[in-house]
Length: 158
Image (cartoon, rainbow, N blue to C red; front, side, top):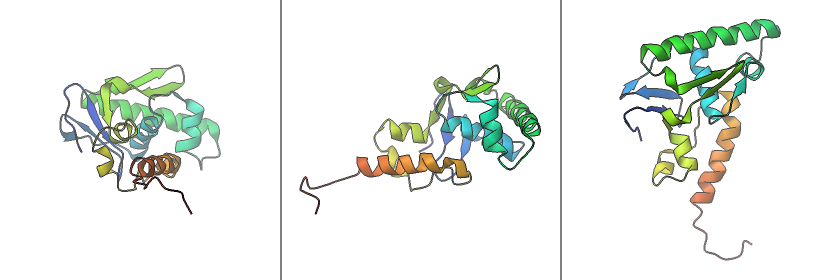
């Protein structure tokens, strides 16, 4: 389902998270920087706070100050990677706030939620399976998928 649209990057969330720019797979310098971006994509343009990112990405880290420093490290690595591909514009940052800029990305799961014709054909029941925090979105996508594909006969349920 990959779409190469000039000026936009393509985000694949079905069957694993990947990012493409100009038809090229983006390689991340660390797994946490990639997960950082995946989490922001999952939030669909809504800002995430530093604390939310620390709690989600470093849930096993008991030292919250250390977890926040690790978030900063992941962010710095992420921005360095995105700059190397010339696509840093996909991130928005405020004071302790982070989000993806929806104007600069095309995402398979966003397209499915918007009911773009044919997109649900690419959804095989997996949404970013590498991240446990993505299970809530997966549940919603499955529900939407079955609602969209419900071919009921219009009769009563027995």
